[in-house]
Length: 110
Image (cartoon, rainbow, N blue to C red; front, side):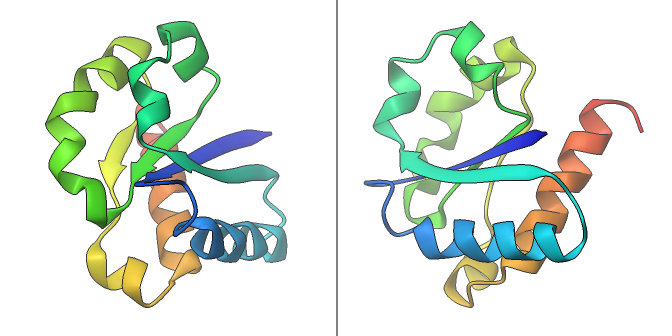
């Protein structure tokens, strides 16, 4: 099972998007857990904890923190990016889920 985590200011505003992503994956028969957490959880995470994720995405409202957290995800070998604002605003779980799947496949060399 894949694990995709969304990070935002408090971990609450991405909950609807996470649900839409989960629904899209279920429709496509993809086993994935999508959850949302506060970006502050990245600061205290060990590389081992980050490696439990297959992909991590930042909400656009905290995109300014990308450069701060990117080294931790690189060290852990976890694909990491910012959700496009338009997709986020339109709650396009299908597009964000497909982007996450593409990132995972690319990281695995597929």
